[in-house]
Image (cartoon, rainbow, N blue to C red; front, side, top):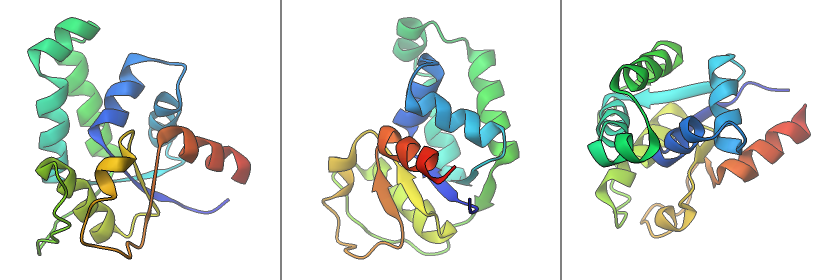
Length: 146
């Protein structure tokens, strides 16, 4: 098995917190067990914090602000932090998705893990050095490497 760097979309973090049965949860578990290296930038941390702390998300899923803060703090503690000194312009439909492409590119991530692959296919960068995969695809590949 080799060392892997991953960038995780917010939807994967949310799904991982909501269900202990899915691939997203298993990926978060691998990060907390330090079997995968998470790449983060400050804008991604702000995105995680913004989305996970939305009142409708917290109410709908029974999340508590202190739990969310602890989870984000743990991810920040364990992650390799990167600064983006240039602006890649993949020009994705959702501007917030550009943050994940920038991080994956800057960190030399092996994978960008997202539940919304289609959102990442409409960009101007055609030869990314990382693979965009769903949580399920990533986890199946991870298990095959063990």
